[in-house]
Image (cartoon, rainbow, N blue to C red; front, side, top):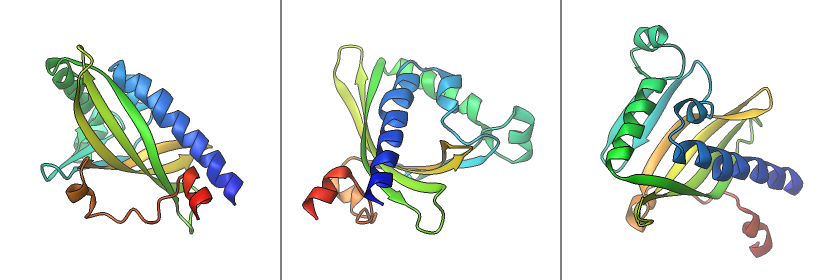
Length: 171
């Protein structure tokens, strides 16, 4: 079981800390959207301001029919907003994974992302809890919860079931 956790860790770490980081930092709308489950309703909970963004990863017509914003449109708007903030790039760190004991094709992950401006100054840090599903051997985002990167914001969530490689050695 430990080997599968470590294998899963390496897969998720590469997906988020290398591929997603590159796609997001490059403001690559289509590349970034490939990390989300296709043709799905996805909720993005922003606990900092109490906002929930409801997106749909399918085409525009189906987004409208589902009463959600098109993921592609949301991404374009968001990347324009980042450009106005003098955004340069992000760093992403995988902090933990939690396998679903009843469904091996479902996992929660905890990440920290840092945003930097073009002068190299970090201007935003947040922690995300993402739900992922595996479809045809690939992991896709199906839900995101974003929290401020501080103790008081994170104290409201139970992270005790999150696993990370160093946890094996300290147990």
